Length: 380
Image 1 (cartoon, rainbow, N blue to C red):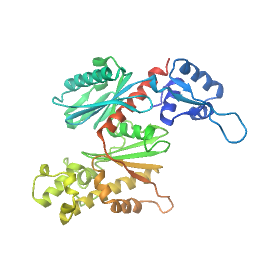
Image 2 (cartoon, rainbow, N blue to C red; image 1 turned 90 degrees about the horizontal axis):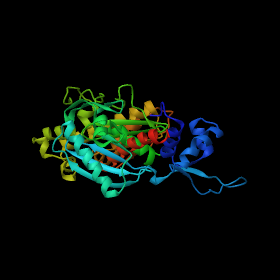
Image 3 (cartoon, one colour; image 1 turned 135 degrees about the horizontal axis):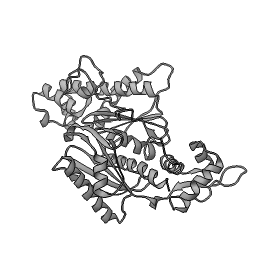
Image 4 (cartoon, helix red, strand yellow; image 1 turned 90 degrees about the vertical axis):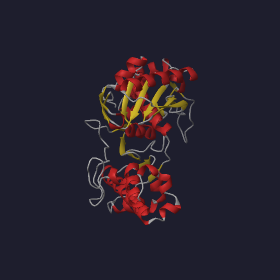
């Protein structure tokens, strides 16, 4: 995300992603001289975008340190998370604090109708909060190129939809769009459990299996916007096939639809009659077939996370999504699988299981909007 930014935009992004820091630390982070850093932050202070906080006493000799920080009231951004049947929306400040939230049913899922609903919801949130957003971020389970175009979103039936441009035209606001997992990884890296962890990785479990990797405060998107697409990686050659025919892939074994489908075969019922909560009940887990399905799912997730750790060596991995309860229930199985894939000379990497909330996904989309805001505001 940092390529081609002005120095002002880079400074704003650094203070958002890393938090308050001294001029010296900011200069080091940006690779600038002290003089250039001072020239860079002066107009941002004058514009009311950043401020010098009261001096912080330091131990030993030396003058107290004054930290630079983004002004909480300097911006408001909107975050939108789209599912197959619902829209979740938040307004946040540049520190990631949610100011107001809302959610709506998606009764019509064509791109024009969804765009109109986004514009309506954002306008209503602005009116209710008294704060007009400076930018909009949208996240969805899709391949998105250039943070503008949804190449494919199967759950909405979209292909090659210029979503960001459509929403910008409808609202008059800058807009960016991205895969929901990568957006979620941003908010966790900037404001959540991943703050200060570098690299940081996130794996999400739900309708699919996704992954986001954050390096130096920026999510790795890849050449085609598809980095982290781990759902169809083969994890068990003897496992069932997913809906497009991949045998034993992570999605077939550990996605919510995959788990429900496999359990339904054992219980001789329809997958639509089941839920993860039902399968995780003590009575249901006493059914050998259900227990096997859940254990196999957790083994698959453990293989994905263990392999990710082997490749990236992150400081922390967060696992979230609606399927995280399955891992919580079989945590020992998960930990054993992850540990078995660790190189003998490597230290264990902590894995945090995070509760799942759709508002957090919308907050991740707001982090995308914050990034866009820095580009505009920092170019002053």
